[in-house]
Length: 257
Image (cartoon, rainbow, N blue to C red; front, side):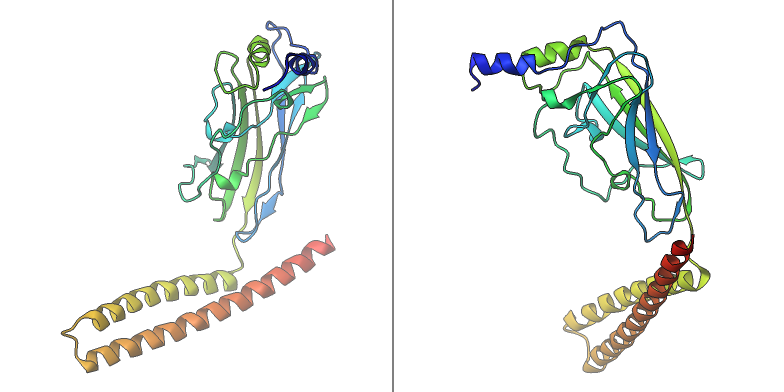
């Protein structure tokens, strides 16, 4: 437990509270590569700029902010693909869980014309960007002083509630290009081989477990699985070779630019 003297020093270290009637003028600026291929990560960097004439306080993206688990501060990604709104991913497990609380260091002073960098929440944790298309990626920041969250001290919570509500948004466009035809064909061949191998393997296991199966049926199923495995191995090798060659050529082309 903090001593009364330590608490006094902590409060003195807090930034001064902005006036509640001042409307923050915040802009989110996003940068990302113009174009990538499906095997590359889409890395988006964000800063929040104070475009107004007075000081502004911005809440950092603390644990839970990206998943809507906080009431006072939220950072949220949204995305469209070829103009159509995308649904959020369900195959990625995120670790945000409001494990901590909002502390004094999470209230960031941003002077006029200056920026702050929020903790990065990878947009690919929320949207699948691996298929070719034109994506518009938007990050929205919202601060609501009327909400209630876990805050380090009652004094800090009081100061946060005196801050004005704020909202900012920024968008960046990224094009995911398709692979060259030869590589795309190899990828399709691999997917087909994987699907066929799974079916044949399931069938072979069923035959092997069936006490009524004859030796000839088991041998035939095992032979089919052997051929399917060979086809899958060949497809994997071909795809890996073409992907390696493509990446090498891509790196060389980019170095020339």
